[in-house]
Length: 382
Image (cartoon, rainbow, N blue to C red; front, side, top):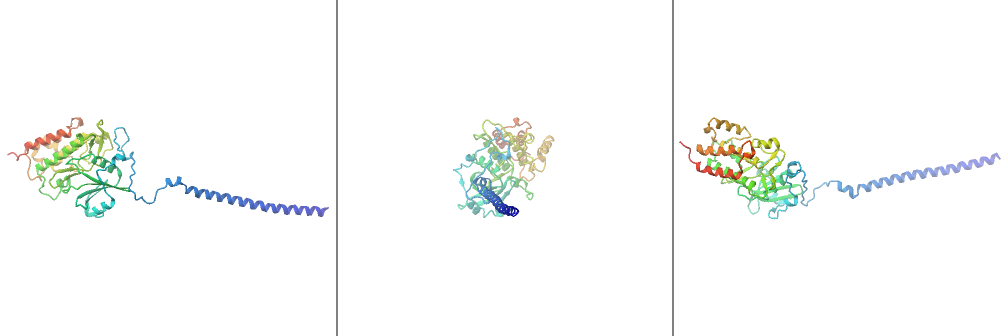
């Protein structure tokens, strides 16, 4: 009996070992299969379209395209009901303007040669170029889209002899450029403040003509269009052609106001020394802000001194209060104006910088006042 029990016991142990091995193998196989399925699912998910949408392409597509976040345009202005935000389809529906290819621009500027650089600034660089038909152009290459949108939106609306003319544009991937007429005699700042010049070629009559030309351009922007354009940086780029005719450029900071808008509120931008006090303190920008800047420009043209280097307004006020008119005129002028002509122009300038913005004249009134000074533009009184 004992031997029979031992035999049965040994048989049960063998069965237990056999099935135990099977169970161990099955468990191991199951766990391995489960891990394999998880790995496969992870690989499939990474290749799914949902992940492709959120990834960025390593290379820009060759097809020209524009990605514009209109909330961030207008120099990151706060979104409000009185902020003009042009729609991309409106801005780039420019069938009347030539769309240049990047290859055409490269050929025109000799691959953006350093010899062709006209100006370098915070928002972009300007290059001189020549087209196959021998037309000289100025190509402005923008570092960002904000100024590009503002400038093209302003220039596409305008046509005036004292404003630069838009000839075309280039959009190629992230590249944004404007192509404008080339004004061949530099800018007003260069001619007023060249240290090497002992005698300026800008006579009193030429300076008066330049002043009136810029005033007419601003009058057109403020009063001659369906939607008012506030330049907001009048003194930035005043180009001169070979006949000393002024051309207002640089609309990168401009604002377009609907017919029922009197102002916009923006971050304070512009050139130091020319900014209107109410704009500097509150960020409220209107056409009267341009008038203030223009008044400072008149003082600069008359005196030859830069508001960026000194408090030009305070300096002139002190001279006028003490009747020292003989110290006002730019000593580099080959001929000094008559005292009547000088006083007449300075009167316009001081009306433009009135601390009360509403008391400043409109640009059309300023044009009339300046043109009336021609009757005083006589040789200096004896």
